[in-house]
Amino acid sequence: MSGEASAPPATSPRAPRPGIQKSSGAVTKKGDRGAKEKPATVLPPVGEEEPKNPEEYQCTGILEVDFAELCTRWGYTDFPKVVTRPRPQPTFAPSASTSEKPTVDDQRLSGSCSLNSLESKYVFFRPTIQVELEPEDKSVKEIYIRGWKVEERILGIFSKCLPSLSQLQAINLWKVGLTDKTLTTFIALLPLCSSTLRKVSLEGNPLPEQSYHKLMAADSTIAHLSLRNNNIDDRGAQLLGQALSTLHSCNRTLVSLNLGFNHIGDEGAGYIADGLRLNRSLLWLSLAHNRIQDKGALKLAEVLRPFELTHTEVVERRRLLLEKGSQERSRSPSTSRHGDSKTERDKNQLMGVSSFALVEKDKTQTVKTPKGLGKKKEKSGEVVKKEEKSGPGQSPTQGTPKKEDSAKAGKGKVTIPEQKLSKGKGAKTGSKEKRSILMESELVGEGAEMVNPLLEPVEHRDGKVFMPGNKILLHLNLLRNRITEVGLEAFLTVVQYQAQFAKSKSASKGPVGLLWLSLAKNCFSPQCPTYTMIQELMLPRDPISKCKHREEEPVACST
Image (cartoon, rainbow, N blue to C red; front, side, top):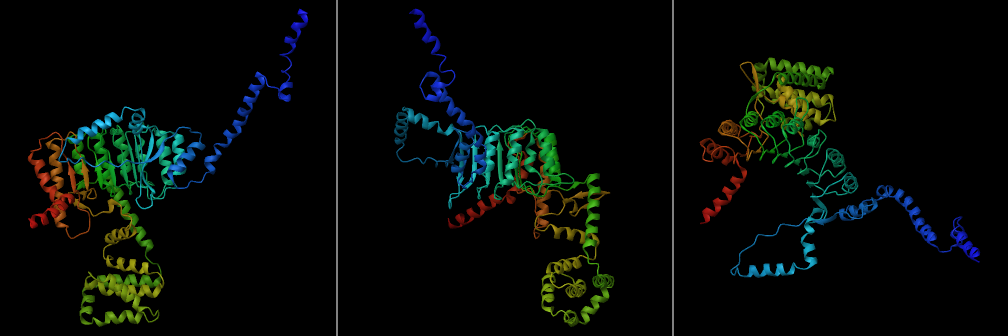
């Protein structure tokens, strides 16, 4: 009996091994394991579909919904929430009875004892995506991310949900653990965003390769860039200076650049100054809280007043002048009629005195002549209108040939008024070839300031070529550096020159130079005479102080 009893236990474990109980649905421990393994075998195909789901999702333009849905489809279970950025609280206004304040504090302390209140106090430190909304349609205007690491996958999610934000204007990333690789990914998603995105702030994100200059590429649309507290040294400043401008390239979109709280020294300041030599778009520059001494200050001051062109810059300027001259000749009409008009214009310029006498004798002929020439085209009215637009401010010697040329140009070409206008302007400066070259370059880049700075009017002194200096920069902040009175003297020379230039060119529409200059908290006494003179010269130039003065005047009159 003992042998028979021992037989069933030996055969019973073997029975389920071939899978008989799995097919019959009997419940055993191994059957339970098999049932648990079946859902696990179903998960992989779902996981294979997950990468496809984000591609199929159509963003709605609501960042809170889109970001949450994309994070879920990417497999994130815990991800930052999109919240409205808290507004700063109004300052405390002391009331008549200040005894109420301690009671309010006591109530807050007593209420903070519960677990829920403690958790609510630390909500601020949880990873979030803070947004500022437009007051009208509640669309996202600015994005603020601070204090949590933005990985490659998060940037991939942003590349899908940010382009749908049609009113996005600014992205601010503060201490998000960027690397050179993730910065490249971030730069790649910027062109996908709306054209309204013009401001980028990357603060507290030091990079080993200091590749911040990639944000200032030639095809970049960023107008305002803040790179504070990124440990940028002289090597990084060199890359940024080259991004501002070189001999053959120049950034044309960046308006403000904040490089405060970095490690830029004299050498780095020199590189930034080199970038300002040929840059004509940057209006606002901050180098506050750096390590710039007098050598770097002298380099920065040098480019703000007339400076000597280097040999390579002179050679490049001559090349550009020749290139513009050839373009001018190639754009000029080659037909016989226009050739005749050109020869007649040259004759009239050579015979300026006789043409002037003819004009004084018979002024009515100058009006009749275009009418006679315009009979074939029946468009004399258009010619007269265009002559009236380009007529004011010209000398009598330039008036007669210009009317003849414009009439003949209307005679030869019928439908392109822009060509007539450009030819009229060309006739205005046709007496000197260099003037025509400069005028042509101004016409080409009138809308987008495409004139190369090397083609600006220069001054020749002792066999050297001097440029007027950078007068586009309006705001320069050098607060808390290491500048002494030696650097102050250089900036005093700059301010004196620009103030004198502004007075002599007050009627012109061109830029006049610095309107705001901060040199406080450096290595000199605040009572230094040089510093006092700089402040006195800059005070009437500062638009903010002007506004305050205008606001104070009616108050003083009323009292």
